[in-house]
Amino acid sequence: MGRMGEYETESNRAIYANVDFNHVKTQSELMNPVPSNSIDIPTRSVLKSTGSAYTEPTRLDPGRPTSGDERTTPFNFTPPFRTQGRHIIDAAKVPLRLFSINWYGASDIDFVPGGLDVRHRDEIAQLIRRLGFNSVRLPYADEIVRANPVIDDRVISENLDLYDGQRLVPVRALDVFHAVVESLTAAGLLVIVNNHITQATWCCGANPCDAGWANDWLFGKIFCRVSQSEDEWIENWETVMRPLVSNPLVLGADLRNEVRGLWGTMHWENWAKAAERASERLLAWNPEWLMIVEGISSANDLTGVRRRPVQLSVPDRVVYSAHVYQWSGWGQLYPYSRRTYEEFAAAMRENWGYLIEEDVAPVWVGEVGTPDEPTDGDANYWTHLVEYLEEVGAGWGYWALNAHKATGEKESYGLVDSQWDWPSVRWAHPAWSLVNRGSR
Image (cartoon, rainbow, N blue to C red; front, side, top):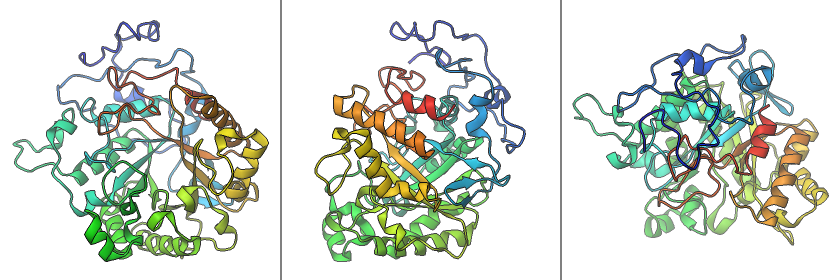
C-alpha cells in the first residue's frame, strides 16, 4: 500500500486519469456543500497513525456529478427525526430517504468493522460520504458486548490512535465500535446501529446459536459460546446505545437482524412483543431514536404488521425493515431471481410494499446486494429491485462496503477492492445502478 494520496496503480490509472491528486482537501471542503438547513457538522482533524494528511480526489468517479443540488440532496436533513405515514421526516418536516451502506465486522470473528487494518476510520467515513451514501448500518454481535474482548493490534493497525499515549489500557471491542460511530457522524453520516447476531461469526446460516434469546437457555449453554435471555439481549442494547445518547446523527436501533427462532421459526406476534419491550427501554434513554423492526422469515415477511402493528408509548418512532436478495422468496415455488417484474413487484407489495403504498409506515430495505460478477438470475433480480425501490421511493441499505470477510475471503458484494486498498472502488460493480439512481 502506497503513502496517503497515492491511489494510482497500473490497473486503476484510467479510472483516475482526470483526478487532481495534488490538492489536499481541508475538512471543510470535504464536508461541503451542505444545505443551509442541515445541522452543523463538527470539524476535527482527520487522524492517521502515520501522521500523513488525508488526500482525497476532487472527484472519485468521472461518471458521477460532483456539484449541484442533486449531489447534496441526500444530506439535506435536520435532526431529530420521526415518522409520518410512509415517510421518515426531519425536524423541518422534510422527508428523509435513507441511502445506506452496511459496514460489517463488529458482528464477525475479529469483533471490529472491517478495513481498520488498512485505513483510518475517519478516512473510511469520508469515503462513504463521497460515494453518495447518507447513512451507515453498523452491525454488532451480542458477544462483543458481553465479553468486550481486547482487540488484536493486527485488525486495527491503521487506528492505533485508539490507544492512550502510553498504551497502558488495552483497546476493547466496544471502544472501537463507539469510535467508529463517532467518525461516521463527524463526517455528517447518519448511523443505524444493528444487533446482528448473538455469537460473533459470519451471519447467517443454519447455526441455531443465531437465535440467541429465542433459544432455550440450557440449549445455548451446552451448544453455543454465547447464550442469553431476552432480558440480556435488551441489556446489551442499553450498553451499546447509552454512550450514543447525545449524538444527534445516531438515527436509531435496528433491533435484530433477520429475526428467527430455533431452526428459523418465529411468529410475528412474539417478535412484535419483544421489539416493543426493547424499544421502550431504549426510548427511555433517548425518546428521539427511531426503532427499526425487521420482518420475520429472514426479514422477508412484514405481513403481520397489518393485523398486529408494533405500538410504542412514544408515537411516530417505528420504522419497519425488509431484506431482499435474489434467493429470497420464502414459502413460494421459485426465488426472486426467476420472476418477471410483475411477479416480483406483487411479492414486494404483499410482503412489505403495502405499508408504503397505503401510507401506513416507512419501510427501509436494510439489506440488498448483488455480486460483482452477476449471473443472469442475479441481473434479473437486481434490475427488478432497482425499479421497484424507485417506484415506491423506499430507502435501502446496500450490503456491503467491505472488500473482504474476516476470513480473508473476497466479498463479491463489496464496493471497495481488496486487491489494493479501501480507496480503490469497484466502479464496474452492478450496485452503482442503484446508488447512482437513488442518491441523485
